[in-house]
Each structure stands twice: as C-alpha cells, then as structure tokens.
Length: 285
Image (tube, rainbow, N blue to C red; front, side, top):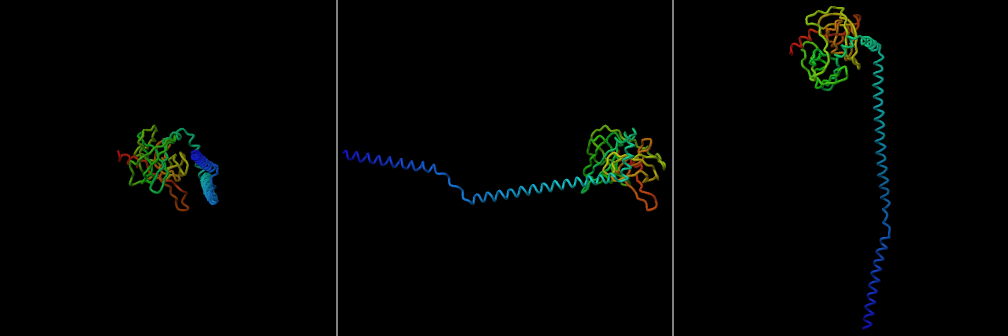
C-alpha cells in the first residue's frame, strides 16, 4: 500500500517536472529574437530607393527646365515690348499722346473710348470702340467683332463687361455692339447727319494702337468721301477709333491704313464717315 502511494507520488512529481520543463521551453522561445529578413529584402529596398530618387531628380530637372522656359518667354516678351517701344514712330505718338492728354476735352473724350478683346474661332483680336448713346451702345468696326463668340469690353476706369453684336453693316466696315449692364459713361457726340467735313479739318484720334491703351493722336482730313483719308498715324489696334473734330464731334470711325505707291506720299489712315453710323443705328431702332 505504501509502495503504491509512493509510486503514485513519483508519477505526480514526474508529471509536474515535465510540465515545468515544457513551460520553461516556451519561455525560452519567447526570448529568441525574431528571424532577420534575408539580404535580398535589403537589396530590394535599396533598388526601390534608387528608383524613387531618380524619379525625384527627374521631376526637379523638368521643373528647372519649365522655369527656364517661362523665364525665357518673359524676357522675350519684355525685349519685344522694349524694341516696339523705342521705334521712332512709337516714341512720337506716345509723346504726342501725353501732350494731348493734358487737354481737358481730350481727357474727357478718352473716358468714352473702350478697349475690345474679341475671341473668334482660332484667333483673338484687339480693337477700339466708343459709346454713342446712354444705353451702352458702342460703335466699332465690323472686322473687329465679326464671327466673335465672346466680346470683352474694358472701360477707361478698368471695369470690364461682356457685349453682344447689335448690328453689322453690309456696305462698310462698321458694327454696333451693346453692353446690357447699366453704366455711367457719357457717350461721344456724333456729327449731325448730313453735315459736311471739309478737307484740312483738324481731328483727334483716340484708340488702342499696338499694345497701348487710350492713345491720343492728331492729324487732318486729307480727302473727303467714303472712305475718308486722314493724315493721323494709325496702327494695329486703332480699328474702331473715333476721329473727333475741334467741336468735340465724331466725324468718322478709323478702320484701316493705306500705303500709297512709291513717290506718292506716306501711309494714310482710312475712316468710315459718321453718316454711316447714323444710318446703321437708325436701321436697328
């Protein structure tokens, strides 16, 4: 009996020893550090980092090229403007414009003249127009707004509006456009319909030649008729400019220049007589 009890106690001690040993093995496993990744994993990470760095360097290179290209364009535009500015003719009309603008009447007339930025299929055009009534009606050239899908109008004070075409003449280069918003701008006075303009009449032209705005120049009527020729210098952007006499009346609308044959004088400007503006305005109202 005692032997049996002793044998049972021995088995119990063995079982307890085995349990403790197994438990000890588990605790030793917990102390084993995790297995290190293979060398290939580090190589893969280095390759990925090198590719990433190459992409970043490539992006920086393209950014530098873009900045250089943009800077080149700005320099080119600046040089082009400077070259344009120092041309003798340009210097002359800028000087004349400054002197004329000191006159109170000319300064007042300028406020009624607008800059047109016209978007046409595949092209953009810049021209001039001027208010002819209190309801936002503007006179300009047909070729400036023809086929336009958007017409932007900038006033002397810098405000901008959209305009739509009201009427276009089929006989002369003339059109009427209109701003729908209410604006407080005094229109220019048109010469009375049927009034005659004599040769030698002094005129002032206000427009947006080349890349300038609100430029005033002076000249005289060389030959009356339709078209009327004038001596005042006109340039690209002057299309739609009013020609104003000493009484403050618009006697015509500038639309082109003409270069006479060699030996027959210099370049002259062409304008549509104001009578055509009256007729076009009357045909639509």
